[in-house]
Length: 125
Ligand SMILES: [Zn+2]
View 1: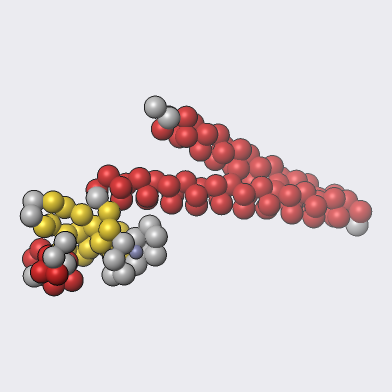
View 2: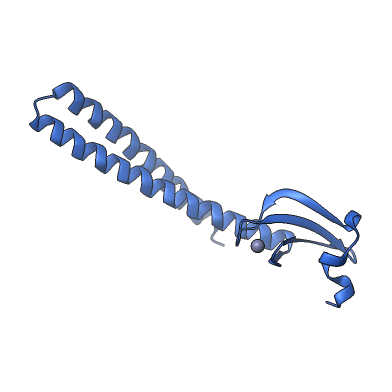
């Protein structure tokens, strides 16, 4: 790409800011039209075709969903621990509340993991 084609030097009507963020650095993304091609570029220079942007965003969402599933399982484990500790302190009502919370988080985590496996299977050729 010649210096004159660098999006940083293009006229404003050739570069449109979007509400999307860069999958690599979280910076704002601009949509650039150049010689009939459309691509996306952030402030530090990460660039994506529409197809590669979709693939990167999908991977970023999947990573966040796996993190959410792990957080839900951790929450369930903590609630189970608190339930056991409450039993020892002869507070059956509180123990039952913690068990209910643990079951909710555990169920949500299992549903999320199941969805992630289905997505992964659907993406395989
Ligand atoms: Zn970036």
